[in-house]
Image 1 (cartoon, one colour):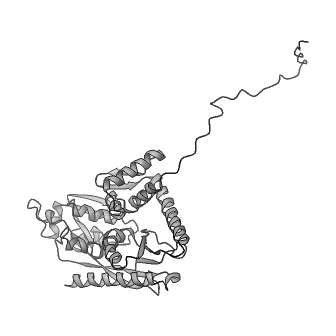
Image 2 (image 1 turned 90 degrees about the horizontal axis):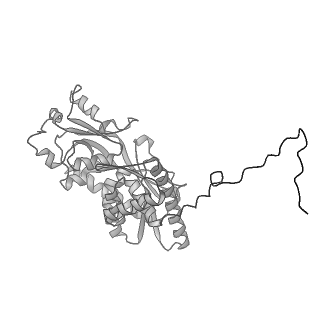
Image 3 (image 1 turned 135 degrees about the vertical axis):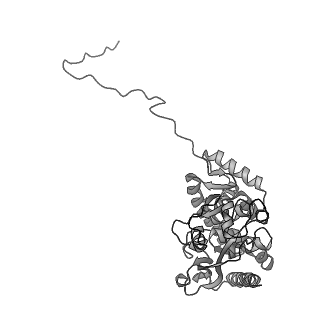
Length: 337
């Protein structure tokens, strides 16, 4: 028997049926993003911490081109730009900044889990320092510590944010602060002094003399972006004011958000920087930087070694503190000489 549709009763509303699903109204679920290779994340974390492919390559014992390839592969896999690339410097994008924070924590947790799984077989010491101190002072000297203590693995957590030693499971910190702000158990490491520095090639340029402060008008000044005004002794306005050059106009200004970038630019001969003795003495010894004027200014802040309370009984910590204090004493003796 053939079925026929019943007529719609008078006055009854017509039934409303949902439209047939379409690809537009029901988009296909996005495939899950594959986890990037661990090696590329390690390379990215090092490059983000240093803001330098060259320094990341040095830390990881690979070539700069290998670091560049790993970063490019990671960016393509994620479909986002992680770095803004400028002439001779890098900056993290917003996405890169978010990933660097998460990657740093994840890699630290993974390392801690590995150490725990080893059952204490590996002797790992975790140290946190300001980024500029890590790049310019500690990293170039770590080979000396490793030669003396090859059985101790060092994990460096460079960060300009003051990390909690207990929460982040850090054994030792090198803090840069005023003496009154240092913890009771902090050990003085290095005093802060500042002075102008340039590359030897720039100082020898006869077309742009640099014999007196007034000669700075021929040169580009490399400026540190310090919105909080924490380091007035490394700011050009305070130096120009002391030299009575208030209405002074240099050949140009280049401003940097990270101090280690200023020093790299000075080494490359891009301008005159305010050097900080703790961070440039090695480069001066290597004759990559020189002082055009003899004047020095003492800073209010100093570097201190702060041991974590929960790590005080560890022989690894005692070995590191003994070594870092010895390195500081040698530097101060060289400066005095």
